Amino acid sequence: MKIQQWSLPIKSQRRASLAVALLAAFTAAQQPLRAQLTPYTFNWSDEYYCNSLSSYEGVFGGLATGYSSAGIYQAISTTANPTAPSPYYSGETVYASGAVSSTVRLATTGVPGEYVQTSTTGLPSRTEGLALVGWTQSLNPGYQVRNVFNANSTAPYFQYLTGNPLSFLTPSGNQAAFTLNSIDLAGGSTITIQGKDAANNVLDSLQVSLTSALTTYTLNWAGITTLNFSGVNSGDQVTMDNVACNNPVPEPTTMIAGALLLLPFGASTLRNLRRKRGV
Image (cartoon, rainbow, N blue to C red; front, side, top):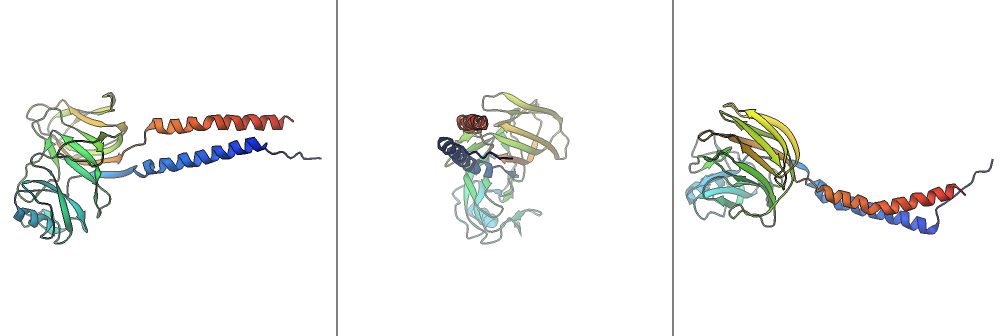
């Protein structure tokens, strides 16, 4: 029995090669986006309130630079996590001397958010972070922020922002869609949390009855840009900690556009294959 061998015409081979090349380029282009899909937990443990150079050096060490005036400071460059006992409060931990080279002042009052740390011992990106609106902490000199609560606000919320540079002192940056994996909440009332997109559409919603102890709520809400808290009665305190999310998610339109770009080449190749088999 004679086996017929066949191959694609030169034009079809070129088209197929081009399609493969485009697919490889498109895949490579998506890698930076995928690389950002890493879990990160915001717990504000690297933020401290300092109202004097003395309290600043007591937290970050005498070698740190960046103090200007009273406010909340986050370590910029660290060689270690907070490990030394605080000279101010029992149970608090601060940075060992020389562990921090510099800091950034986030705000004078309230807790505006936190920059993403690129690693547990690395630098905050200064281009990505969680921006808080309506949250604060009762801070004393040298006190670690740890968690936050609503500042007399009945509708606090937070957003994931990106931008270069990103400053919480003068809120700027672009809203980025992210996946909220889980969040720790405590309080004494029943509230509603809503995950909204950039057009303010509610994508996910959950009503929770808070207790005095921090409780972890696993959500895995994807594609949200804002997390809103509603139903908070005046005078009620909602405490928040350990906001775990994946930051930020690739835009679906980008992936769809790339796939549509390859369709004409794939269709052309299939037509040529059918013609060849019919010979």
